[in-house]
Amino acid sequence: MTRATQFALVAGIATFVYLVFLFEILPFPLLSKPVAEEILPTVRRMLIQIPWWVLVSTGSFLLFKVGWGIFHFNDVPQAHEDLLLDIKTAKDFLRERGVTVD
Image (tube, rainbow, N blue to C red):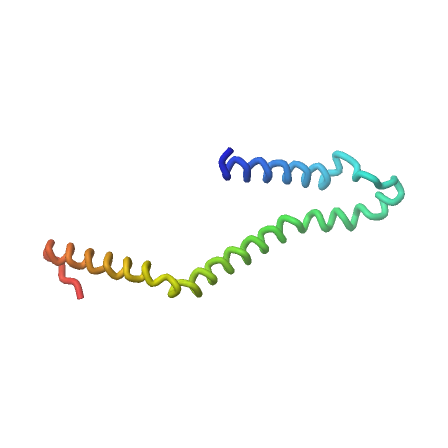
């Protein structure tokens, strides 16, 4: 099973469970009727906010990953040398074709 398949499976199950509780298709487990009627409006408001929190959390995590990658970019001297070699090779290739490169 690939990672994409695993992600799709987990995301599908989580979405299904989320929608079942959001639309009250099944009652909340282990709650009596009076307690459920008192608590469910608050739980329902929290359930509506979950997708937004997931979106904000994912965005924050991805911004952190980009920043971390930029912060540690100079820690890879071999990659730096490879990039400089690629740039030199590209400039030489363009000069052979008659393009002026500074």
